[in-house]
Image 1 (cartoon, rainbow, N blue to C red):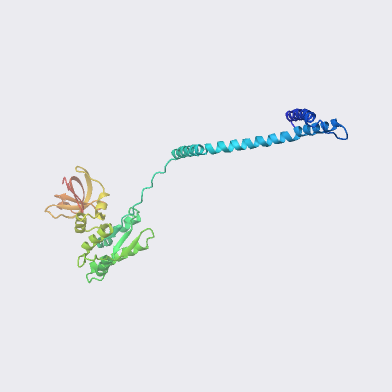
Image 2 (cartoon, rainbow, N blue to C red):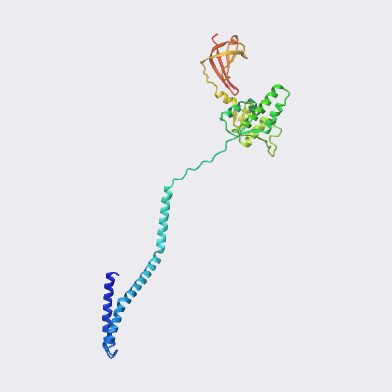
Length: 315
């Protein structure tokens, strides 16, 4: 027990003891116990002192706690709306601070599908597209329309030996493409529109209509189809243009060594070829047939069918 509590209880005991003595003398002076009036006064004084030592501190503590709970409840009730508002404001400020520290993730751009490439009969028979696919320069999905496959079969069944060989070559190339695991090749039937668009049209017209419908490109080496599709707004993959773009670059005034192998269309012209297949027309070169000569490039003619180099010979 704390010393301060002992002192407090002692003082209270003395006060109540003295109070009991004075009260008993004034109020109970006529009462006697065993014919002794002081015995009653002493008993009352002792009981008062014991009450002051033990009961009064207990009652005071109870009253103190009751007053504290009453005050706490009153204050809490009166401050409740204010504390709720303050807590909400603090929560909002904390939320804003946390959100400002978080770096927003950059939006992921939507991936657009790779446009498909529709194969023309000419590019299949040409065969160079297969070599391009093996180099992985073209990784778009390939589509062979059913009407193109039907045309290849008709060419392969032709009575003309050259056409029959070309048709069979095309079918063999398609079979190699199909076996290549890295090449996506499908055969699709072209469905006509409800209005009958494309009905009765040729293969070129159907290719253009199908490319528009699928928003696809067309791979071809056909000059006329290349022009018609370009006018219709269809993107063309022309193998001839690709081949020309990777050929050896020659400039006017440059000297070349070639072998004149044949006559040209014009009188006195001779024709030779570079290693990449580029045709070189030699002016006044007809007399040099079969000879390896040095010529000088005079001009270059670029066409959709290829590049032609015109040169002059000093001989």
